Amino acid sequence: MPLTRCPKCPRLDPLVRCTTKRTENGNFGREFVNCESKAQAGKALKQCHFFMWLDEYIAALGICRDDMMTGAAPEQAVDSRAYVATDTLAAELKNMNANLAELKIMNANLAELKKMNADLAELKNMNADLAELKNMKKLFKVFYISLISIGVLFLMMNH
Ligand SMILES: [Zn+2]
Image (cartoon, rainbow, N blue to C red):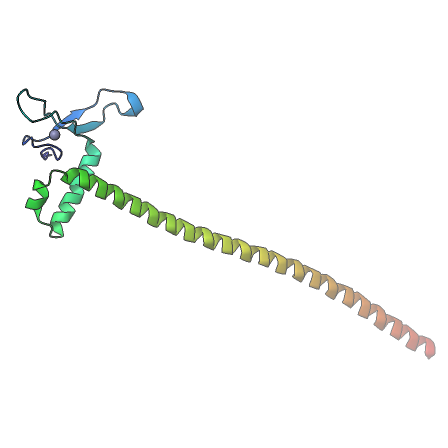
């Protein structure tokens, strides 16, 4: 994979790809790119500490290519020293935007769930009402049957 030159300093050589030997934060073996510029006596060039995890760097480059495909001027892009940094920010923003969109969807789903819950509660209520109605029907049936039986009995007694 060709590496770009450092976006943070005037050094023309490309960034260097390395693998971390540090075990902190579970980063052992993770690849990164950094700038090899060293402070030089008598020169204005200061040591640059540009550092980026390789996956973040690739993600930032991916955005670069997208921009090129959508017609952004690539020369201008390469000239911009803050380019990769800006793009990382843009990538992060995009990510945050995507997360926000997801959150909004989750929120909408939650609202729907709440509504469904309310509907369910109403259904339960209706179910209870129905059970009560059935009970009342049964009672009425018993009542009417008794009434008719008593009526028949009276008729029979009067004959
Ligand atoms: Zn640099």
